[in-house]
Length: 263
Image (cartoon, rainbow, N blue to C red; front, top):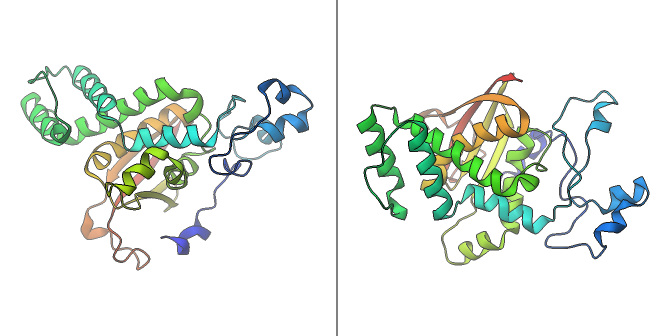
């Protein structure tokens, strides 16, 4: 889809897929990984302690654990984050309303109602709609992180790598594969590219309504929780999105990510 842009990615850190074929689960028992250091590195499918690299003078990156994580569980975790289940989205909405001290006006929430509920609640509380949307994405990431901290904590050494891993991982998810077969997904993918100093461009191709609502908040929360970085995420109006011919006839949303501060 975006081969012409691959040379621009400049992905840092270790590829999380280099040691594991799709769906493959190593046969070694966990205790076998406690041998020599060379043996340990060979048996860790996804994770690597990046502090050794920092000692050699490379750019500081998030230190990951040595918890064993397999590709299929990693893929399912990312799919759950980008295409959330109804229960997780409902919990995130409850937390969002509580965060802004907004009393829910209805007892039950229908799957197709989220965008309308956000608009109605924001209007009633006098809170900007975009603020509620961003909070919803942040709370959703926190819900998923509470469930899958050991998994989400090993995806990519930087925010850019984290976002660029989504497309590959989504293709490995059995949940997303099943949705594709039923026609609910169409090559949904995310591409993150450097723009200017402290700015990233995030392209979301074949956008879905719910994901479009939560993605800015997900990006903001991931930057804060995983990389101790403060970012500002804004949707670029469609009239300004025509920045090249690479993505002609490929519907997408473009988000501008401003990296403001690292803690």
